[in-house]
Image (cartoon, rainbow, N blue to C red; front, side, top):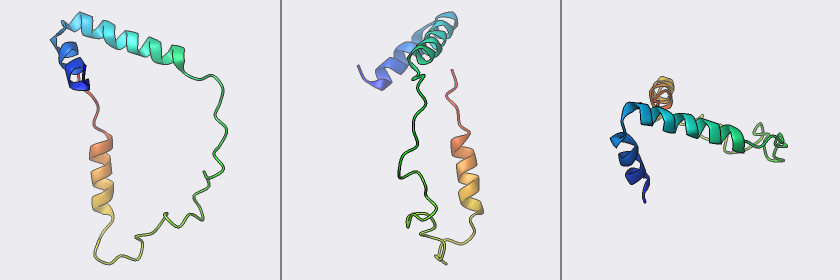
Amino acid sequence: MTHQDILDEFLSLPAEAQSQVVSLIALLKQKYLCSKPESPSPNSDLTNDPFVGMWKDRQDLGSRAWVRTLRETEWSKSFKI
């Protein structure tokens, strides 16, 4: 069964059943969350990583405002039931 098949099956359920599925997912996520805090990765300090800021001198990209706008619109999208 593909992700699309699962989504189609979910959307075919009545609203009350969809609500129950969402509640079950929340319960399972809470149950299987790792209670042990993750230790920071040895590579988590990006201050000196050459990847960070690699496009800072690019003149052809223009303003960074379009990137912020794109991120705000794309990252604020949520799955609507």
